[in-house]
Length: 547
Image (cartoon, rainbow, N blue to C red):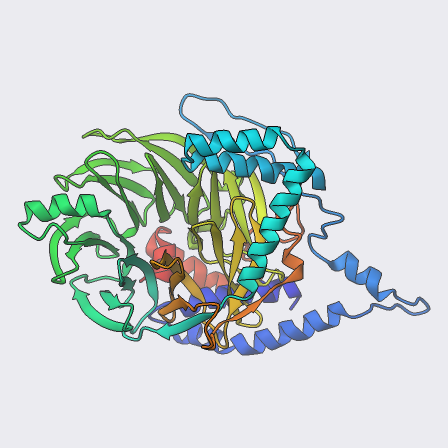
């Protein structure tokens, strides 16, 4: 079995392992995971050594350079031309590949920084002051200043220390986490929503009521909670949490009492949701069949239902009046919320899996995080994708130095971009930190026996320190420790030199992006066909990950 087949086999087994019910054949496949990891490690060790042929002395360094994927000296940054763009009333658009020299890459970073500052709503006075500074100094001085700021930030993260605390209570995989004040709320496939008090790391409430696995959570802003609390004769300080489930419902919970104050039946298994704080407020849900629906926060009535995607909607996020939805087949849709009682969502762009180059079929799991004109995409690969959603241009950001790495979630907090990383071959897990808006690699955070991270939430304390919570097999709170203290941290901070050169990689790297079944055994192909016939070929992402 070759290296590529072993990698894909391990990827298949990792996704299979998190199903609730397993057949004897599936249990046997999972039992072979360690054997396959050992074989992959041996094969990689063989390939990393000098290659020789009879009568010819092999140059180990040259051979290794030939096998290296994404060599920065041979694969300069570039952007691929988008494939067909699905846009109402418009023709397909095309763009040419543009090679990126180091100077152009630096200029692109500077342009991205300026664009993000404008889109993040910087105060006019600050913008004009920066314009005067730029006009009064040469570009070289600006580059030196930005490099000095980045060097300082990188050094501070290399010294960062975190204390980890396990929140023990769920008996199945944690699928979603959100932070509300000093509380962490987690949803799990065990059908429960739990509320945790962070300072004491204790379970505060167990919200039971769903009959299917909880797939997603969202927390409305305080002003929208106040409106609902008034209509329910509750305290105006009441906070609410939304939970979506495979039982085809969205439930609204009052955190102070732990009671379900409203349940909305959606007619479809809910696989993603978000709250859009525009106008009177909207709940946007995604289903296992690819449907996107809008619900009024005022009346809890359905405002719109659109068959937006071919497969399950796996991620929905909002940015001002914009709503972004991503699906299992790798497609991304961008919507504008017009704040109307009927059909509030207007489709602005739809980029198919051919454009994003993330086509993985019904078993895919896309997680997205928007920022200005860019959307960061995680899709179980060794890199993050960056979609420039107005044009369809794509670029890559290296998130793992090995092609056996996978990225399950991506998140932004403050000036940080955080991507989870899991190595299929070694079972090592980490969080990779990048500076925003330039997307430059800062450091990686890991600890012994770290589990695979499937979801992430973040907030900052009054003193500016970071607090994070990660979910997956385990639910863990990260508390940043003061740099001046003597308490020892639980997290190891390291840097991977191979990721320093991976700002924007060429789209034409040598990794096989398509998840084909050519590595499966004959019996596995037959099992897959039987499962597809039995279930009608729809919703397999939900069955595999969340049932």
